[in-house]
Length: 185
Length: 213
Image (cartoon, rainbow over all chains, first blue to last red; front, side, top):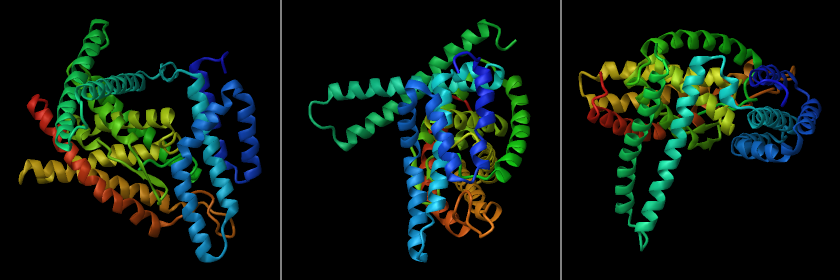
């Protein structure tokens, strides 16, 4: 995937992604997953682990539901369990493989609106993460004993307002920088 | 309430994708005309808030997840089209970066949560604003969670009917409406209360900063 541009990788991903929804044979889906694993290189196990963790909660809850209904009816549909879980795993794996190899912003560069929204949301989300971490460390460093519920509630209130104010200040700077570069002309 | 990849049949997501592409094009027309250095920071900030809220998910037995949306405040402050577009961006990022939701399910998720959620919030808010603004915001936020929940439950619940093997075995999502509707709506009726409280908090913040039109 290194040799193709980010946009071509996006097109390839979008073309391949629906394929598992047209396949209703678990063996073919397993083969597709094996091929994807083989092609993903050294990162394959990391991507597989990430994919398994991402789908674990949802697929487990649906699968447990199917198992419970099956027990109640006297026959568990193992074919469906295998088919559905393999299909979801393969589709999530393809997504994480794509994102591990390609910069999302580079892939979206052909669509200015999508790029703009993704840039702004990602930038802000990272700013939020940083601010929350700073607040947590600052609060921990000031707390000699375990903080009371009231203290934690006050922190949450102060944190929320500061978070919104700081986030706005940061994105104002981004917007001014965009204006100075003619983004709104 | 994100629907993950792999639970929707192509008979569902392909036609819905065609509708969503049209809706995104319609919404994007407004974005470029309204973008300026005042709107961008606010939109970015609240889009990121929605992004964060959507990642705090609890899986529900109906095959989806429970979480606050943050779409009501986007709709109340920026209008239907910008809220829909911003929320679609949030769903795209969540799907690709965290595997929350999915790309084939994105059109359904975006139309349900982004478009229907925003439209519901605006409709309810305008309906009740004359009575009491605080109550109007709270009920609008609650309804903006319930209506998308019902839509998502509906789309999932019809999968066994529209995609199954000759013997009736479902090919995609296995449960019908009798399971998906209560499994999604009951938890979201409670989550909606949290959404209402959060939306009121941000609404008051927006009032303090004189953002409201």
